[in-house]
Length: 402
Ligand SMILES: Cc1cc2nc3c(=O)[nH]c(=O)nc-3n(C[C@H](O)[C@H](O)[C@H](O)COP(=O)(O)OP(=O)(O)OC[C@H]3O[C@@H](n4cnc5c(N)ncnc54)[C@H](O)[C@@H]3O)c2cc1C
Image 1 (cartoon, rainbow, N blue to C red):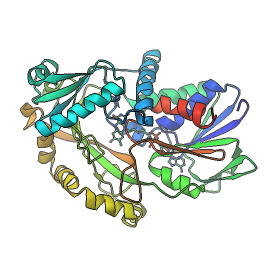
Image 2 (cartoon, rainbow, N blue to C red; image 1 turned 30 degrees about the vertical axis):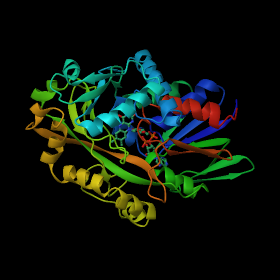
Image 3 (cartoon, rainbow, N blue to C red; image 1 turned 120 degrees about the vertical axis):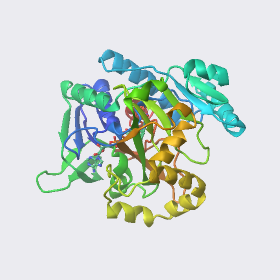
Image 4 (cartoon, rainbow, N blue to C red; image 1 turned 60 degrees about the horizontal axis):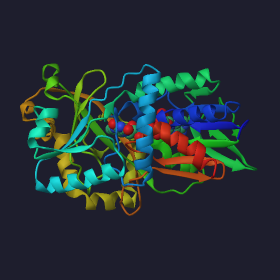
């Protein structure tokens, strides 16, 4: 492992974290990151809620539960060490009725099993002590949930990689990988770059991860089905109505967390994201579409199975897609004083969510090794929180069998 040449495909926060970890653990090795965009972290890593999740939601003993807890500690430490803004603003997950209270109790049990520090249940009055304008019958409070800019963290990691002698090549799209005699060859699109051989390659291609893996001989499924999430920024004069993060209790039948109030590290207050099928894997404006991406999900039987099973949730989300007023009202259920607040559309994020052929969404992180190639096949939220821990896991456990 020591003098090996490692290739990493994808310059999002996960690819960069893996490159950094390799340079930390094997300082004599050569490490090269290939990113198809002209800069690092142009996709999910800079289009997200910016929350350092504390580990409330995840199945105890899952990779998500383990790597989120470790990742949250590592992100905090990385920000403090590198002078990157980190705000431990805290979070409440708020129940509005008895059904949600029962779901909240299950979340509380999970958060205890996941050893999330400081979590406690709040009654209606206690909610007001944390979030004075928030209503609810009960809430789960996580005082150490924080906010950051993952785009800034990714840029800092990129700087560190270069300082440690690693190479980041941007504007270079990888088409596929082949392996022969323990060497992995990376093939690029276009003629200006020759194939390059590596001892080990790790693909961290986010929204393109299934395609790159399948083109390189890995299994075809699960496939990535892109779900966009729209955010709105609330009028500056109202932003103090929310102190930190206010989340609904997630619907256990739907994998996304629901429209929430998210304080941003730059001081803005946003509402979002909703979750609806995206007409392109990298279509942030929401105005254009990508025919090949649409073809891919329309011809995937998993998508149709998912759609038929999730109609009520999809209809609820569609209401927020079609009308800004509905979107705001969804959030104002928790903070009624914001019912008529003016909002401005902000960026969209597009989730790289893996879906099985039976229509189920893959909940846990999926990292697969075949020969000397390791693929991240599923790293949705809390993938950014977990990135430094995902990197440790890949380098120390997946690539180096215990
Ligand atoms: C709306 C939304 C909200 C979220 N909120 C949170 C949150 O609050 N907290 C949290 O922890 N997580 C959150 N997440 C999840 C988090 O953003 C992701 O888990 C994380 O950013 C994934 O990082 P990545 O490096 O794997 O993928 P990406 O950031 O998508 O990076 C993949 C990179 O690979 C490159 N690439 C792809 N194909 C190729 C190729 N063939 N050749 C070369 N380069 C290629 C892409 O250009 C891209 O730069 C959210 C995600 C979304 C979409």
